[in-house]
Image (cartoon, rainbow, N blue to C red; front, side):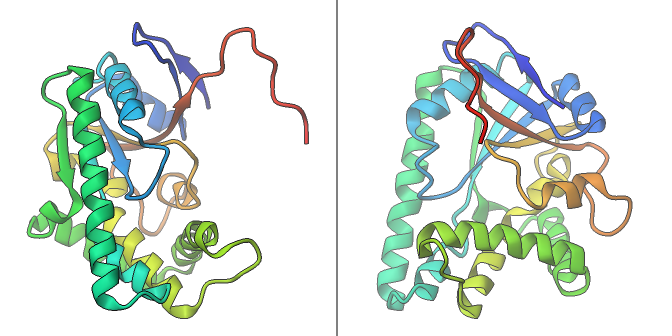
Length: 242
């Protein structure tokens, strides 16, 4: 399901809610969550500024959560010494936070929340949801396969085409993903909003599992997911067929 939502913001984005239920939650316009990963060049400060400005026209509130957990473990899995991995991870996280805050400031939209993922570690709701994720990764084959596929996709960008991740690299990727998944399951419980749409610029392998099936670990009733990316320029030619 896809629709282009137009606003007065300089850059327009196309929103693709995953399902009719996700679209209904989008239409409520209560809350949008933007997740940002360290080292992801897609989320420069200008993109953050444009996205926040656009989203603020459709949602009562907007929050950004950026990952700052298990980043160093990934560098260690790629062979960096622990001290070097810790320094590099800290540098990446600080740079990410700086870009986000600059983008939010330039957007000029008051009330946009910016949260490191680690700030939720002591939250009972987060701990409950994270525990459910860890249990599902042990017992739910469908969810684990999707999570591993997501981790492999992420790792392949660093490893190079055709190089499979090692067991340690895959485990590090899964820990990173597990830390983020509570916000795909029940953001309303974590940020005290009536309903929420978690968005990213690509479809994720876990989306059909969390939002499309009838059993196993699934998103809460007030949680939705949507792909949000730049809208096609009016009048431009469609992509050539492969």
